Image 1 (cartoon, rainbow over the protein chains, first blue to last red):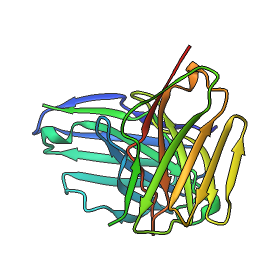
Image 2: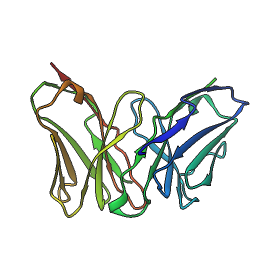
Image 3: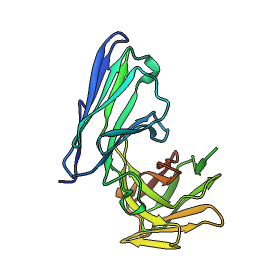
Length: 116
Length: 110
């Protein structure tokens, strides 16, 4: 199984709502990532979890709250978002986050978020 | 700051020709560089990884070169097909993460 599964595929929320994005992988990978991608822009790293511990937070606003309940699951909790947060949110995993031999990222299909 | 440049304009080529995409980077020395393919509304898909001590890497119709002196990687698709039409992202490895370029959109016409 070489899939990263993200749910939901589409999410529309108001600025006062609380919602969560979910990501799951069963490849035994120990690093998981959240990226944000706007149209015609590159994926921008938000968070990295390595061995279930947060290892990188790219100065992301606190209205985005990541959680890694176990090595297979990654959540992104959303609260009080702004319209400019509308984007494609991509989850990815890799065997580890620190060696050249295991640097390949496996991406999910993304969750398209629209904030009204 | 670390910067990656890929041709922002779309590359249009005829089926059967070789497509060559360029990735230039500045202000760092990546240990390796990856190339991904991304279709509209989908997540990127890994294609190739090339390390700093490798000059060239091949996989089927794909070839990647890595020139650490020029700080440049070239990505070639030989015998291109309309199914190769997509955006191709380069991603050099920074200090502790991959940094993605904005990508070059390739359109292969029959």
